[in-house]
Image (cartoon, rainbow over the protein chains, first blue to last red):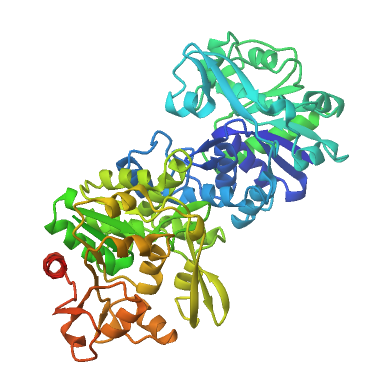
Length: 308
Length: 308
């Protein structure tokens, strides 16, 4: 049984590959909620939705986020009403946020996510890292910005200094996350090629999670989100630069602070430096489902090879 | 200065005619909120929106409700998610409801309605009858039904027995309604050809309103919503039948219980019966803006002719 930690587009792509090569009972995908935010009275959960839409095959693959064949009449009307239009909510995507908001209060975010996954005919387990609200706040050279204000409204342009996760001290891991961590069949933990600082750090910041990951004595393998020291998409490389960590295998290992047993890196990064942990060198760019399957399979085999 | 009471499609059409023939400072349109309802976490105000959309020229004239050129991607996605899809919310219309919900709490419904009217370049005053929630509950042969469950979900098919207006005892008339009633320049009150039981009764049920209307000693004129004893649209005639009131001039006068000084009726109804109040007989069907203007002008002149 594999536990995958994911967030963002790269994370969703590898999660889709893992789901394509593992039966449902052998995979649990735990997703960042640090970028969730209250917007226009709704609860928007970009990472959960990206993972669900991607595994459900309804995502806009070219764009990376949102739904294929989306329309934007709501946004147009909202703009004409003078509403907050810096965060795009498609007409179909809105049904997700409105349904989630209507279900919240009588259902947990885990239950709502399971409901959405079932509607998308996804057999694999997808769950939020926590049912309690955790909100990433980015400290920048322009001051503190709520995550989506930093990420979308300001396009991650302000200089990143640090990040904190409001509410994380009181947050409990979700039931699915706890169940995966406690599962005697757990073979390995795979950290998807998500932004380490924005998508994975919130999950690792949950109280007790690092200790629990360490104590399980199963291999923890990260798939590097960098190719040739650059991110495929998004500001991961810019942020690593701004906090003074190299976008190399050793930089990544150092950022995760001894947590990792191995890293899957791209050929383009194999000559840069040598962290003191196992490396698997391959083609990490996921253009389509066959790339996703192949990278997922290689990562699982690599992780299994590290079982002590 | 004219005070118009309105609700529904017929009410919106005459309100548009009144706005076309009166300068903004000479007209106040007060709208029913009894059919407002909380749906999917939003506040939907069908009568306010119909009046605003109609005066703003963005309404779907053929359909009677909603926006011209509306799209339905949200409803389609909501249905696929298993959401409550018995009440149609168009993609553009949703921007109204989401913006209203986001503004509520820091703004009154009056202020929000004024904001929407300004965005639609409507110069005339449109205001809810009250900023306090009033919710129509219909007692039927199937039991009590919240208004939209009776009207839309059950298509007004259950037999109507009576209606009550939850919250009306605690509701205060809106500032615009009070200002119009207190305005020394008030010449006449026009009850638009709205459903008397569903759209006008909630307004008249506000504490003190009937007494205030009586005490103003200005003509109160209703435009009949019936032509040949039938409603142009909606269940007004069916409901009048079910409560045993004739859909004739005398029936209408009796329903309003001595409130009216005159009724504008269609030629088709002139031979039915003779209420003990003034009648103006004309063509009351409003096919287009020229009909709306003509009927509005005739109604104003008729009301002025009744000034004591």
